Length: 131
Image (cartoon, rainbow, N blue to C red; front, side):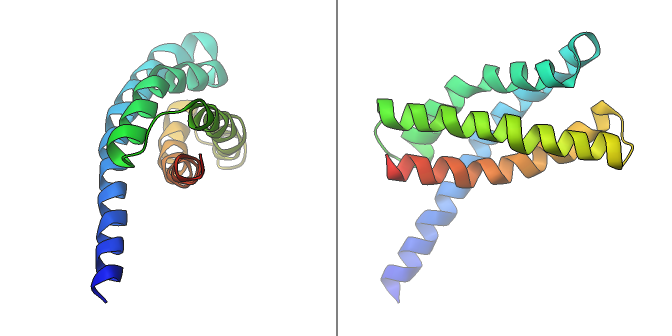
């Protein structure tokens, strides 16, 4: 039972650290998004904001949240997770919130960001441990 509790505690710690890194990245992402979206549209603003936090996110999560070593494989994996999260998860959610729910881009960004943080945790955690 103790080994299960330790494993569960480690997973909880990872998730908390991932969330702390995520808060910093969300601040970067959101700031860039809200600055750019009126001039560039939400697609370019999402990509730009996410890209700005990517390098910090990579090193902070690999080295601090998951305590793994950096490698070309996990860097490529993180970039692939980033691409999937942006172009499939976030763009799809933004489209749904804007075109189906009728929200404006600034409002639609908020639930999109929250959901994408959760999906990104699972993508990144899987990739970091696999590679």
